[in-house]
Length: 226
Length: 207
Image 1 (cartoon, rainbow over the protein chains, first blue to last red):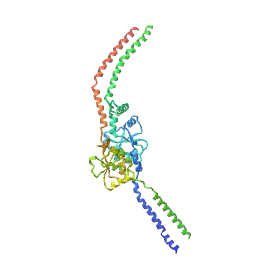
Image 2: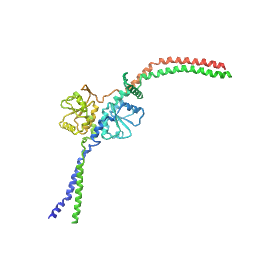
Image 3: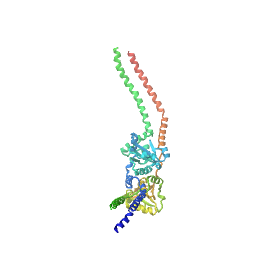
Image 4: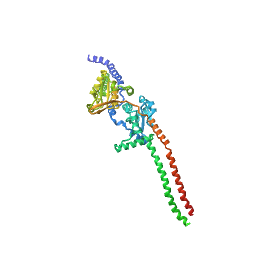
């Protein structure tokens, strides 16, 4: 009797097992939810995004450009019109809406260059940085203050006043030299070469006077021997 | 009888394997916070999500201060709630955001400047809280009072190329204006030449 019942139950054993496996397979339907969950964990993204270590100052960037640092790659995330109007030297334009375009992935998802994102201020560049950081792209930086800060510090640095410290003067002279590197000309820098010409002219007048009498003295004895 | 034993073994093995799968599923730790949108969608939302100005706020909007507690206690916008930017993912605070979203209320975040708000805003947005906006103000503390000014985001500054061109033009103009001093220098060099001649003459005569 027991045996018969067992046999009856065992009749459905394959059906039961198959049913369980199908139900488990149905669990795969839930997985598309995870599809959107790409990138690093939100907690990590938050701590990365709050930390200011991604910022690079305009002075540091200017220094690296002037020293021909080959690892710097500048990316302008503004639209194409603003990019044409004015930008930083040797920069690439990746408008923010095309940031995840496959064409540009090679520029962003790499480890060979220090990519520096910039926009008018650091707002759009920061948004681009957070999206890229979620995708775990490495070596991305944001230019602190963006082009406006670049203009105010490097292209058109403000002169320190008399009561400021020596470091402020040193910084100003660096920035002024940097701005000249990027093409700005200063009136006081033009005046300087002019006085130099005057000095040269004076030297010309004085040196032959000194040299010529010496020659006379040396030549005289030889001539006399003759 | 032997056959029955065989099928028994098969079914036992099958049951065990199913158990393993079920245990694995149960022990799988779901991440605490899940992104609700993929990066592409997040980017689109970020671009389209504008900022709101202080005078555009209505009384329905909840204002959240993302500065730290110390700064908040020194001074804050009236009726603002304080949630430090680094604490937005704490369970208690996520509950607040969830409740606000379910109530259909709009939320405006502010900090010392709009750029500071980007990080918490974008993360909340990517977690699916799309009722949040940036309050575009710059705030600073002055004698235990919060002073706010409207901030312009992505303000277009002066054109660098034009500035450089202008500086070059200015210099060129000045250079054009000063050809006279160069002319004056020429007679000075002329004076030098006759002196040399005079000195050379006596040498030749000595021979």
